Length: 480
Image 1: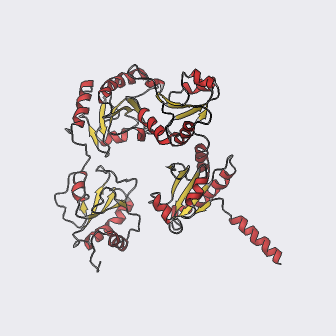
Image 2: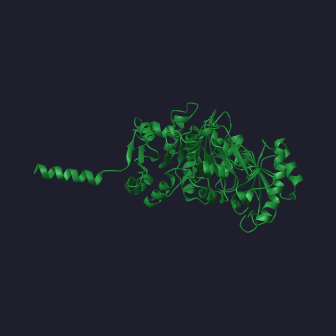
Image 3: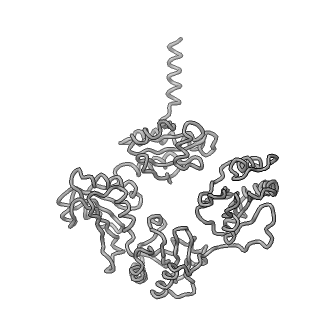
């Protein structure tokens, strides 16, 4: 009988055994550091989306352990043994998934949430980021690419080679990367060992700048190699796309028009060459780029720029996320572009704001915020502000409205706290607020307006009050 029980218990254990590694604050760093790559899910047991993901995540974990080499999946409970880890890595919602290559090399997981998608995504992330070029034929193939590509030329076992491998993991999603220790390949590339060279795409090569740029510091570390790539990949005037946007430095001056390197490369470069000549005068002050109106129709439409027009329209994007639009009525020319760029640097242009007109009477318990009044109300240095970003058509926002109004009524006598709302479809939402769905609610405490806290709690009046009492800079009335 005891033997039967033991067999039964063993079978149960097998059925419920998990291939997902469970992490805690005490084991997190040691496990991460010993894995070449690992996907980590930050979750909460009560989270509905986490529960939905769980079986798919388990399937993916089991399949990826059979990969060659295995790719581990892990999870950490943000409500119990993993609280500190979740806080350290900025987890503000559940589930949050991150890909780790060591404790310092982290990227957000942006793939599907079903097993097959997770498997494909992680397989694409595993393995060396830089292809090894063993023959001249290998070199010829990568040189035929019409993308930015970076090649490291090394001696066997060099420290620069190790640094390049580390940097490649951070650059792999946006650039083609290769390395070689073959003397034959290095000679064919007219290169020198212990260097890293960035090659510009063929479509972007002009007489106005070199077709490649080389890092010659053999002692460069991973961060310096990454900076070298980011500083040089765009050249005088890069081709901005939805994928490579984060790699362009700001302030960034973008000329938007009918950019099409497949069907009209000559026409595309006609305007790009003119932008480049102006860009030459602003090196080190502004980053320049050209971009397809079709690729950025949403952003342009928000600024009243027609994506279907044949005009060249120019926008400067600042480090703070502000946008400065060149008057669409001005005909594009090198002279007009140069004046616009200089006026921006001289502080002569006001940022473009999509904004409703402020209400004539804003004395209600919930203050109405527009883009024009955001600084005045939300960034008021003397008050804490709870602000809801909503959409008029959003059902959840409509359900929240009476509760939010009641909250405002209850706090009417509290001068140090403001309850506010803003229609995020009719007004520009300023950084660092990140609104991807409705309603999105933030707490902007006085003294910390640059780092507002996203509200993740329940949405009953008592829940809001409990949160505000805890977070408020000043003590609130006891009867609230």
